[in-house]
Length: 319
Image (cartoon, rainbow, N blue to C red; front, side, top):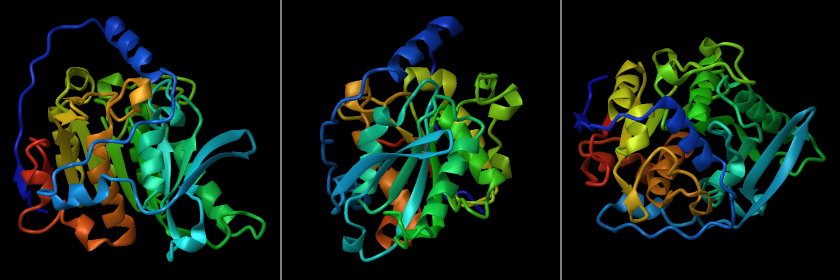
């Protein structure tokens, strides 16, 4: 498919040792999570962002679930009967040493739009196995008469979403199980040079993403921040976007909640993040892909996709 628009911006970062970088990122990813603050509202001049950045219309609840040894955090609509539609499934992957509680602003926000979000509690999800297994857990629960999910989930509309190492896992879940995963959304998908063995991945190859193998639409989100200039630079994300042989969007955000956006910005303010400006287009992508929302699609399709004219997202592209 032809590229509708591409604008890139170069970032030049000072040298930083790998040890210092990883120490800083670990500190950012392991901060304690508290009740998140409400994000600032965007200008109505950008109607898609304005429509989906505020909290959605549905009350939410959180909980946990276990499936054998697997532990999941859940963010879901409080009253499925109030939705008027079956709830699509979003399965989440944490960044290295992260937890779902550190991204509760995002996950609760998605639940407020009627999505059922399930997140592995593991701090390493780069293989994608846990992300895929979590989605299958909810699919099974939809058919269990005693389950709160029984008959309320749209088991045919599932998204794999994640940040950093979890972004790798989301791509891997989508490429290994395209029959289930209908779309993928990544936040700061790392360069392959950062793949390394960990408790989830016996080898670096087990934690390496292959966007060129995707068969489902994808939204790659990253930033112009310093840490992302090293880990998930605009050039890296552009290469992933170009390699994906599917309908795709590339979103490179500059600022969020009055601060420069960077690798850990998707996390809660209590964990050191600043996620507010990410929420509108992240929600819009899932509304577009999983619910066929025509308003949401306007950010990514048409003659003038909104994502490409938003001055806070320079370097973005769609195809």
